[in-house]
Length: 250
Ligand code: HEC
Image 1 (spheres, rainbow, N blue to C red):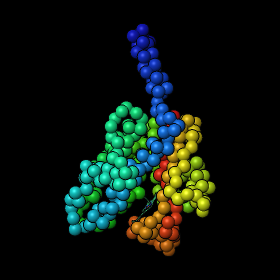
Image 2 (image 1 turned 90 degrees about the vertical axis):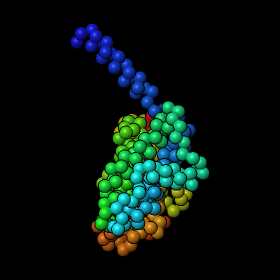
Image 3 (image 1 turned 120 degrees about the horizontal axis):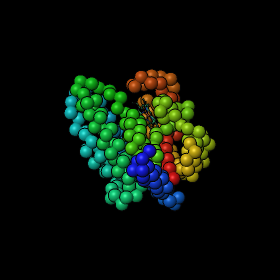
Image 4 (image 1 turned 180 degrees about the vertical axis):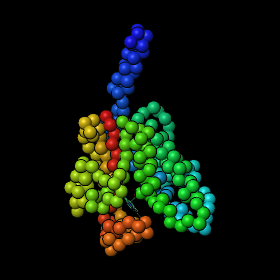
């Protein structure tokens, strides 16, 4: 290696080391707020898809007017209604601000890519379900924030349909031993500093429950085939159905 190359290599290495050392520093006391905020953006976006199921599955319509800009506007409105404050999109350079922007970008990408399906005329049920949308947003977000944040939709082991959503050991532990406990406060998230694959991280997980609109697919009778071709879980109203799980690497 000649001298110039060595200098370049050394500079690159230094830059890399600095980047790793200064990688996302969410202070421990900010973990809950960041977790609450990011999962709320995720859920606000998914609610748009949930509220639009009849429109999406309307075979008589081509263009549904459900483009990315519309979905993002409605996401912001859902966020405002749930949080009582506007979604903060100021880029102050913080990891949390980057993550908020990345979540909206993931929504945009997912909706852009789904346009041909959403607008397909003559087709009724399209399988563009809230959980499918959520899974794609989660994977797009986690790819773009690789090594800093990742988000995932999961469920109790006995209920999980998509392999990609299977709970890992930590998620399963929290779901089975805390969220499912009769005296666990409903809707309360749980956060913990715990390494993920050997890397220091904070984890934040928020339980979700089956409402009336979910039971047509996830309810009783157990094993009956639902409209998606999957098997109903036999779940009951208000039962724990899933969780949104966030990792913030330290
Ligand atoms: C039209 C049928 C249908 C309805 C209604 C429905 N789901 Fe699902 N749900 C599915 C299917 C199918 C999957 C698997 C999606 C995939 O393959 O990614 C799924 C996946 C999920 C997951 C992710 C874990 C897993 O099993 O892969 C959760 C959590 C979930 N649903 C909760 C809900 C909740 C809560 C509601 C109501 C607000 C609801 N679902 C309404 C069909 C439905």
